[in-house]
Length: 237
Image (cartoon, rainbow, N blue to C red; front, side, top):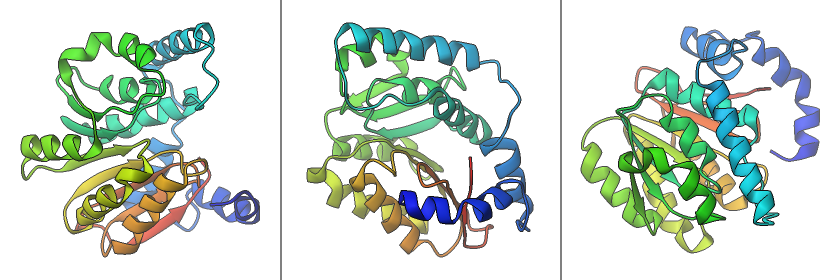
């Protein structure tokens, strides 16, 4: 969603973000009590500390790009994972490890398959060192997807899309849209700044025949469940 469109739809998105016009009990609860939850969670202080540590290393190494996930977005990653409580997680790409840390912080028995595309591997390595035994790192998205599918079997998928290279975009899109015929949760970040992931998000939405999608133009969450009718909510969160 471009900046102009975001401004033009701001009032509508704001009203829906308050629950107005949302008739689905699931969507109403998810918007107000997950995406827009204001109460503090036990992990927030730890997530903030880890993010600050990554920022210090980023400054020390004089790394300017890409941007680091905001503390607000890191908290949201935690809340979404906390709501669905996935035991097996696939994450495609990470910049500095903060989003992966926030997702894994939910449960000590969760595992992650991570396609490594770190902007600064040293930072992610330090940040995730305490979870190293729960993370399987692959050098490509294709390898990570194959390993994840082998592990999760017929279970519900929980997928985080952070960064995907143009070279892998076609194969990732082919697999991602196949999730439209299953049950899964897909969280897509960097929609505003990364055209590749924005394209993947649009492709997934175009294939959904059931399930709900929530987006603020920067992040998107697709809850693909057969019991949910097909709806997309443009929100302010």
